[in-house]
Every structure is written in structure tokens, then in C-alpha cells.
Length: 177
Image 1 (cartoon, rainbow, N blue to C red):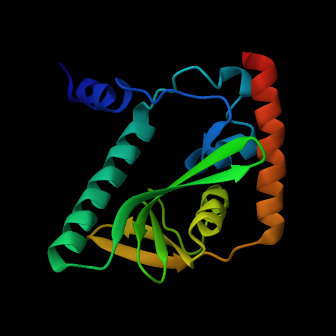
Image 2: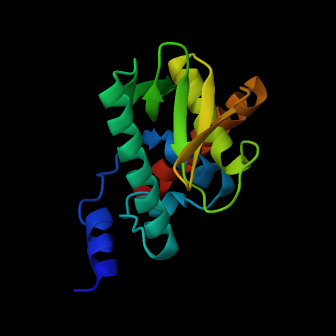
């Protein structure tokens, strides 16, 4: 078996069961940009190619940071989840690190990041709304580092997210019921 086949199996063999009306903050950008099609909502999504390797790299960085935080006794919770209700929708917000004063959502993009990229803003906005604390985008890089970039919440962005998510939800219901 090829190593890429093992990676693929690890990431794709146990897909999360989808439920109409339950959406994840991590998929908001795909919904808002139209990459996630309502008619495909219940179909299992596969991660492959470079996306698969980017995902695994980020997971490895996060595993190490979690180990570091645990070993030094940092006042931090990992993989905390809050469910936001938006009318008849549940938006699941699961973030990487929650400290008493702030939250970190960590990423490992394969290009340099100096400010919060548009592709992460919806997820970070939902994270801010869920945890009601300052949110930082944590950018992993090599050699091992975590650069924190503050996210600036926006009422306009939040209202846009809610409106587009509600519209997407209606389309999902029409296409899958």
C-alpha cells in the first residue's frame, strides 16, 4: 500500500454523518462562496491530493502544540465546542484553543500570511460569536512557530453569514427532502 493511500484512508474512511440543519463553522467559507452545493450536502466529502497533506500537516502541528500546552500546564482547553442557534439551524463552532481571555483558531497555510485571509473570516466570526472573547488566527510555520493575528469582528459580516446560511439551509432542504 502506498503512503498516500494510508493518508487517504485515515482522513476519509469514517466520514461525519451529515444532518440537515446542522452546519460547521469550518465550512462557512465554502457555503458563502458557493463551493459547497446544497444538492451535494448529504454526500460524503473526500479530502485528497494536496488538501489531504495540508490537513495532515495542520493536525500534526496542533497535536504538538496541545502536548506543549498540557506539559507546561497552560490554562487552556482544546477542541471546545459551542452550538449556536440561528432560527432552526445549529451552527457548530469547534475551536482549537480556548484560554480564559482569548481563543486561538490555528491553521497551517502553505503560503505566508500577514493578515486574516478572507477564507478564514467567516469561521473566525462564528468563533467570536460563540465564545464571546477576542479571537486570534494562529498561523503555524516552520521552524516550529505560531504567529497570532488578531481577528476584528464585524456585525455586518455576522449578519451576512446568517442570511447566507439561512438561504443555503432552505436550498439544502429543497434538494434533500
